[in-house]
Structure formats: C-alpha cells, structure tokens
Image 1 (cartoon, rainbow, N blue to C red):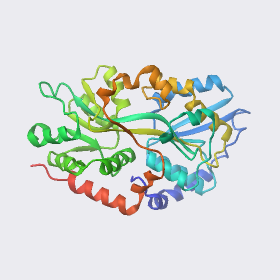
Image 2 (cartoon, rainbow, N blue to C red):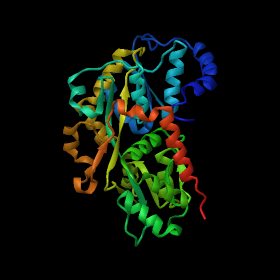
Image 3 (cartoon, rainbow, N blue to C red):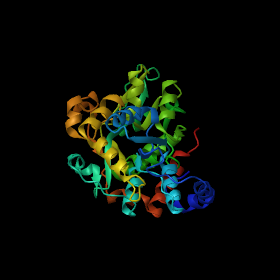
Image 4 (tube, rainbow, N blue to C red):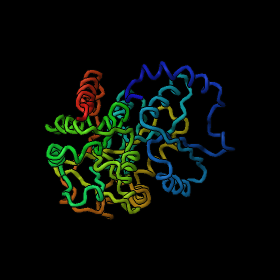
Length: 359
C-alpha cells in the first residue's frame, strides 16, 4: 500500500471497514466497568514498547491501555476511515512517518498539548504544540562483519558509492534498503536524501546496477543481514540494529560521515479522541523525564530530551563516531514531498534507477 493514497485507499477499504465499524458496540469511558481507556495506534513493535505501557499503568492503574501495532500507511488509513464513518477510535497516534503525522496536523486533525515537558523537547521536535517527537532514531548503514572480513567498511555515501563501483561483483545481490514505494519511513528518508545529497541519484544507480534488494521494513532487512544474505543495509533505523548487535549478531553500525539523518517517532492526539484525558496523560508521560529515561534504558530507543540523552550518552558513542547528525525537523517542510507532483517525480526516479537490470 502506498503512503498517501488517501482517496484510492479509502475507495478500496472504506465500505468494508465502515460496515464493520458500525456493527461494533460504541467505545466509551464506561466500557471497562468504570475505568478509563486508552487506544494507541503505533508503528513501534508492541513488545519493544511494552515496558512503557506497563510503567504508565503503574502510575495510572485506572486506565486500560490497548496498543495496536500497524504499519504507517495502514495506521493513517484506519484512522481516517474510522473518523469518516463517525466512529473515531484512536486516542493517540505514534508513527515514524513524520510527514504523514505532519499532514494530519496541517489538515486540522490534531489536538494541542501544552506543558513544561512538551516545551522541554527541542523546537525541531515539535510543531504547533500538536505533533511531538518522542524519540530520536538515526538512519544508519549496517554491515555484516563476516561478509566484510578483511575489507574496510565504507563510512559515507560517497565511500559506499565508490566501493560498489570499484567491485560490483562483490556487492551483487547483497545491498538492501527500504522499498520507498511501499514503506512510509523509507519514502521519508529518501525524500530527505534527495533534498540533502547531490550523490543520491548516483548511489541509487549503483544500487540498481548490483541488483539491490528492497523490503518494507528495517526488521526484515536486518534479519537478512544477520543471516549473511546481505552485506550492507542502507538507511536502516539504528535502534533495531543496536538491539541485534547487543544480542551478538555479526553486524557493524555506521553513522554516515557526510550526514546522519534522524527520524522522530512522532505523537499526535486526534482532535476528537474518545478519551482525551487518557491521551494527554500518556503523551505527558512519554515526554516526561521518567518516560524518556525508560524509553532510553528499557526499549533500545533514544530519548528526545537532551538531559536524558546526556545522562546515558547519545547511543553510547562520541560525536566523532557519529558525525553530522541531521534530525528531520517536524514542521511544514515535511509536506513538500507529499505534493503529488514531487512524489511522482521521486518515485519515478527511484524506480528507474533501482530497477536497472543487473548484468
């Protein structure tokens, strides 16, 4: 499913979903015997996020939390379809697709949240007090160290480009990245590379020349790297890679030396959330020192608040090892590549380059 095909998705999905929704009993604060509720739609792995939900419930045992894990585009589609039939269900939306979250804010779907914790996160991590970055996720290059034995690891886009051009047979069939035609975070990262890197098209061409393998998510690509099916994965989320490295996987994480993009897992409270009290309490918890510290220490994700990041050391690395960090700014600039003409151009360029037949 493509990222912003609101109308086509709606046409295909809307009728069936509407019938199902209208057959369901209404949700409300009394549905759990007097307890309040919280329904979270999220792109983050449910098991990874479980310590956060459990700790929140120790603070608010009266709130019954339901956590639904979805890919970014289906998350958006489900939210819009439910709202269109007059049965909004989600109380909080969490997604790595920052641009789609920004679109919701721009289109008037978000409720404001203002607090000292909200104001404590960096300005580039919040927009109009309606969208908030809760984590800081670098997009990295990941290498299989066994496959790369005896070879230097390319540590920038230019170095990777030169390595592929210099020995295409070594890399043939063993480069992996997101399929940006179906992955929302993949499209977001590609749009930023297109904006920032004069070598992005050349890199895509090199990927295509050696038969790049594309997938919808980081987890699949990292599993392929772990099994030795790939030698390098490009633009993968570092938090997932770090988790595998800590478990002993033969992987090396490289923060590109030219620049390292950082995605913000972004929270939005819908304007018509059925349980706004629960939604604001949970968002406030996620932005608090306690919540941020737990995100950093129990989930493998990286805190957005600088004071918490300084406590643990950002990713456990020095600034010299990370290079130039370029967090993607939450704001109207994210809407540029959601423009239909911009999107068509980027996807057409991507398809023409990465689909180059391998010799």
